[in-house]
Image (cartoon, rainbow, N blue to C red; front, side, top):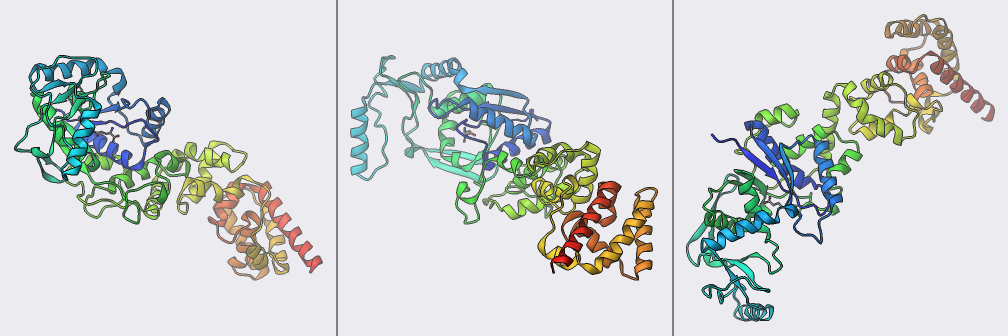
Length: 470
Ligand code: GLU
């Protein structure tokens, strides 16, 4: 089999949308799965709407997702001579012609068709005139009047178009700019693309593209049109449904592994499996398992999957991704070993890195803010004795290992005749301000002796103050 060559050709008119990212992923995974190539092309012929900033934002999002390309990025705006050459080939082979019909004439044609209830179509006035290139001439493709054009779509099956629905569409404007479908086909041919997976909003372009391939005597690529991504109300996903920019998810604390897992699953399946590593996706991806029905973007599912990926990631690997979130919380960042230890205690509960950073407050900030309810329930007079006893034990403890801490707590239990919870909960509130947190021994070990003792003392002062004010 020939080497599979796929592509992702975004128009740089905004950020990378999750739907676009999914298309990119399908093409990238198919290339990686087959040992093929993945080409990146920027479709910026619409100079009014295209910007370098958008192209850069797209590169940044792809890089974050870990989608790398083997060829490109190409920019259509730098390839006009190539389009010119192919337009000339189509004219020379008798499959296209110059047309000099004025805007008024075309408008009259449209109005007449509309009045008669027909689709507006070019009537072929210049088709056989043999005109040469002139100041206001466009180039039109000679489309067949009869027969059918069929897309053999790997996702949707055969899609049949009646050629009578087409007209002699323009392939080059009077200012020399190529028309979109022409540029796409020339690019796909010259870049060796043999597999085109794209959104099904492009189905209507495909018959024109197929005719251009045929006119150029080039074999067709494999086409696969993927249903759009929908929002929870089953309309096309848009800003109304929440963030649609890929990098917005990065900034909300999602991992690229979770994002790609979720996006791929949104239109592709492998039995009931939901969780996939990047390597597994590459190993298992196939065009046959792309779904025919539209995927519905579900924030809660994405969040749950993100939690699973956070849990599965080696804590050391999360350190650098978590740091910006810790900084955003305003913490004084400590060394990476400390951050890694913190992650080990939080990774089973955090759904996003942002949530993890917020939950890590007590590890980084010495001023513990007690939650109202937590303080009411556990920072009361009855806790003073056990806290005092614990301070004594901790002060004389050699090392702060889990085992040593357990023994220290046991001793306090014996001395005070209290159950572990009666001691551990006030300590937990003293150290974290909350009633729920990672394991108490883990926390104590990470926070360290000085800070632990100081926080317990502060909690005792708090209890004393409350007593006085009561
Ligand atoms: N530039 C098109 C888009 O952004 C993609 C065209 C294609 O895949 O053929 O929707």
